[in-house]
Length: 311
Image (cartoon, rainbow, N blue to C red; front, top):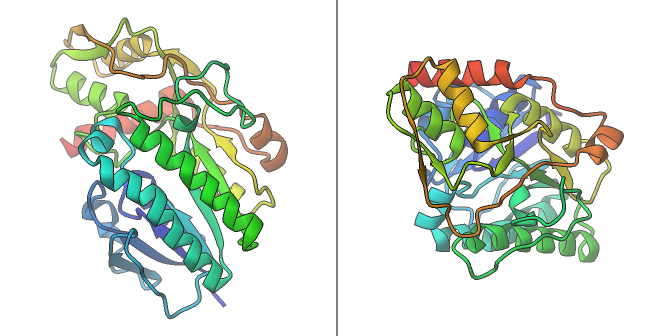
């Protein structure tokens, strides 16, 4: 029988890529989204696919499924600072109640569940690069705490269900990811800089721009997620690209690749903004035989082209 996968946040940036990927693999896909940050346009081309079902629903509220679910990928959550600062309660609820409900579905269907966690569980790290064994440096009461702690709690309850109820779970810690179908007003560095550069507006860099990030192209991320889902690794796994650069370097690169006339301006660094971010992907390399293969320039060219067409 064709296996069925439930993807919460299925109309989001990463979720929509996962929907298409699983359909191409021959799965029946149920996408669930309430469109707080997801967009119907992201899945419009899939709506007539005979193996695709979309349900508009808030996963923080109970839901039942008649047909057997084999896999659950819980990707519902605001994921950029501009979103989780606008929706702090919803962010906390989807990390807590949403994860609880997904685990309940997994338990009743004997399904394998993969939780989308984040590099933000490491907070503003004191260890570099960040391995899965690092417990993090997080301010629980700061403005970013609503996202960081929601994901840390989600990991905790996922591991509790694994140990107590024997639910078959996986946890992916996602580092900065970019690619087609990012929202123009996402608020993160990639869409911000590209949008500003294409419009020849000032490119806004926070602080001195010496904070670092490691950017992974979305197709590499999806391959890593799929490999983890089918693996036997039941502890968190970092999936990201260890190619690290400063935000200022990144802004200059986008300005160059878009032939933009934008000038770069500097604004105050937001509270608790991480100074460094780079994944240690030794575990993914060893256990999943996974590593990113799309170069930064190739991925950025594709993303810029998509933004040009979208604008």
